[in-house]
Image 1 (cartoon, rainbow, N blue to C red):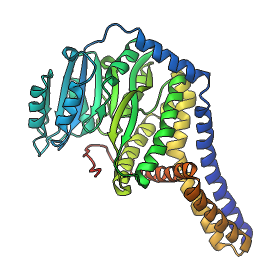
Image 2: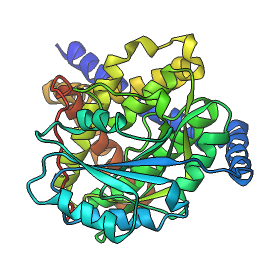
Image 3: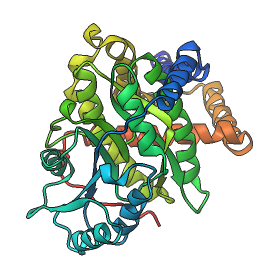
Image 4: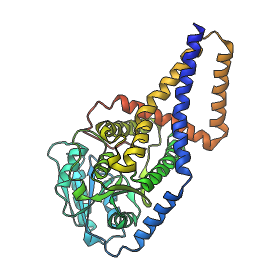
Length: 392
């Protein structure tokens, strides 16, 4: 009995350590900033300098009951360092009940922006609304951006320049700068997550393509993405996957900044992260043909397999492993095993309390593994509707 219990605890510990090792090794790989990353950064910097022509661009903003913030978003678009005569703004009002469409129309007029409001007679949801907008855009370059995210004045110009001139580019995403007023567990964990995620996307872009990208700001060629799946998956992941499958690259450009308000409470963060995780995992599961596929270069052989492992396999493993460890210790009659677990617990607590940087990463890691696991368990549900999360 004791041998079986001990074996269970060891198996659980191995599973947990395996997950930590996967993330740690991936982080070490990306944080080294090897030659590929430096070359990529130099290339996108050079690309931006030598672009003389900026094409006409269509900006799509999806909304649902966002009357309080849509005017500010449209004003933000009007202040971009981009020729306003080359911008077309399409605001999708997904059957809002708070007058979002009326506010948007007035803002477009007030700020003298070429654009219109597309009103859905029935609630369609994000993906179907996006497909409707794709059929209405007039330009070959499309920018998708969220109503609550504010773009740096040069974000669109930089992204379009890279899209136009970087060899093989089919889509571009930018860097999210989290905006919050309270420093708490949710916001601190978001900062740690963003640091890790940004470095991941930078390294991935140097190898082939970033995945999945940052949904609040996506710029791409219309002819590569005429539609996305109507009933599953996140916008950014679906668009990135379409671009990669077309033979092009989807690039992360850290100079293109997006200021996004983030949830300041764990309850709000959980709602947002689980929803995003569910939709992202759906894209992983529906594109299993990319896994290990040499046709997609290093994206198929390195990036997608590792991301699949980290997002789909690791979360169940880490919590199953923890369950095995605690179950094994609880059933064991070996005092040393119980003391060892207690010592490990206090060690982790000490790291969280006294080694702030490492502790924040640890807390962020556990939280996001939990969100991914919940998203995985809910991934069978269709992604149809969305609503803005109150972050106050």
